[in-house]
Image (cartoon, rainbow, N blue to C red; front, top):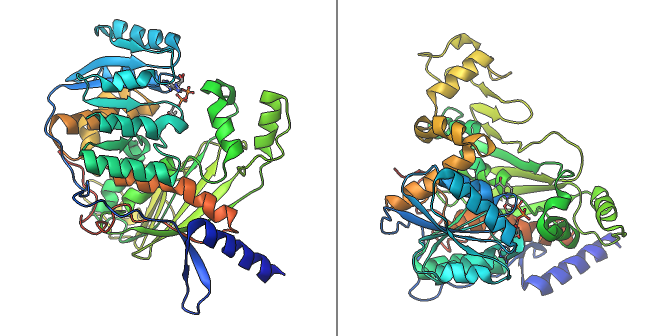
Length: 464
Ligand SMILES: NC(=O)c1ccc[n+]([C@@H]2O[C@H](COP(=O)([O-])OP(=O)(O)OC[C@H]3O[C@@H](n4cnc5c(N)ncnc54)[C@H](O)[C@@H]3O)[C@@H](O)[C@H]2O)c1
């Protein structure tokens, strides 16, 4: 009976995704999704650099809870003109104009009142960068249209929700030669970037496993999202619908599409209990078909034999956590709930590090040693920006660093820190976890969005 059920599931999967790769003994074992062929004449965007833009002229679309903070941060970045502001609701544009007034910036052109007002902003000929912070469903359409209209685009997380949207962003970026960056801020946080620097200098040996998550109980926020888009998305869809804060730093540690690639994932989830209760509370109705489980777990295997564990839970009361953990052959780092390093003796030089003999992989190094390590391995980006970032703020400073780096790279004609393939890989967990869950947790192939270029770059590097 069980076997029949499994066969049926695989049969359904075969129809839906057209390709289930057979294992050595002939049994189907992995769902594969279609990888569209790269159109003739189109090339990849790996390490793509555009012509320098000394003054970056920006238009913002989406000024709800998140967008205005970005407007405010941009007023602190040198060489920026804020040309236009757009939100469906005119009062949100007015509030953002107020930010500009207070910062001594000229009033920007305002667009509002219609779901398509943003198109007028995008069509202007005096904008270099469109910065998108609308709800998830509208991200990809705005991104594609912006690139079609000759603009670079930066899109809040997740930048795309379906494989169709992801491939559309990849193809449009490759065809138009415009940057398409996902605004993943967590990769710039202080522990993460310092640890990445330590990892790249070999402190942890070879990294074999990384973890990340978005565990954030959102009860204080559910009724604040415009039109309740976030709860609705969770009601109608299943899977890790918000993976980028977890997978971003985890993928960077493993040099994904810079020498390694994610090959496949499997997901399991709990049943939805809190989700339907929130619907009842907010809408006064039952939600018997609520799709998303309260807690989702995903395991990923890479080409080079590494593993990644990603989790999502925005429903149950738990301390905020992005997990952020790495296991190396010679060391270990962990951010939540306890920040610390465990390092095999001899992995770091004693110079400048007190109590060298204390380094012991059986437990975290002392706070004193941790502080000294973090100082020694402070990332060049933090050395330059930490002080200002902490004054400007935005999740403790990481948001400012993200915006600053985006503008700096555009101004200097450098490749961006995160490219369209990072966007594609990190967002692909959304549709792919859903496929795995809806098919009995079978493995699902993670496409190579670089279409053959994943091994061309030797490790992640930030451009200066
Ligand atoms: N990186 C982070 O740390 C972080 C934190 C919070 C939110 N976010 C992301 O930012 C995005 C926005 O989230 P939020 O909390 O601000 O949501 P929100 O609902 O508060 O804001 C969305 C805004 O988009 C506007 N909007 C919707 N459709 C529009 C359209 N067609 N044209 C113009 N404006 C439109 C709405 O009026 C609203 O003001 C989401 O992708 C979210 O995941 C990221």
